[in-house]
View 1 (cartoon, rainbow, N blue to C red):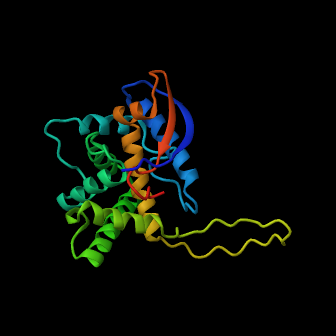
View 2 (view 1 turned 90 degrees about the vertical axis):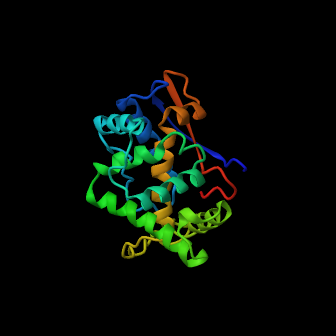
Length: 227
């Protein structure tokens, strides 16, 4: 699978094995760059600043490594859907236990953020059933890629307004907020990418030197890119 282009991100102080504080800093740096790269973003992502506190991040990282790990928030079907999405959006993220890390953070997140995440999973599942008659987790890799490529190619709920030189400055009235399939995809992508690239494996992939983390955020790494 072809690797997608990388986007430069802020330099973040961190160590090769992220502590709670270090990993939180990485998450915020990553999500700041990702959010800026997504046009029409209507609200800050749950992992971006201020995001979860250092204790929550540290606890989630420790829980993800537990030999007797069990999900705290997601049910079996939701977890399997997230795991499939992890591998399609950022390959290697499942091996880095990104699904476990996300579940632990969601367990202590706000009701709104929990609902947004579950809604996003539900939309991917609904699209899969509509197109292929099966839940997302049961699709082939090619079918999953088709679902995600369509979602990534859709329009966000809010289009950025750009002034054209020589025209009267008259910004249109904002349309009522709405959430599109693209918005749901972007939400999932940021959760998964943030979880993986703030992990030890993800940081090494992006070039952690041990003292400074020179972040370069790649889009999901299979054909289409989902950017």
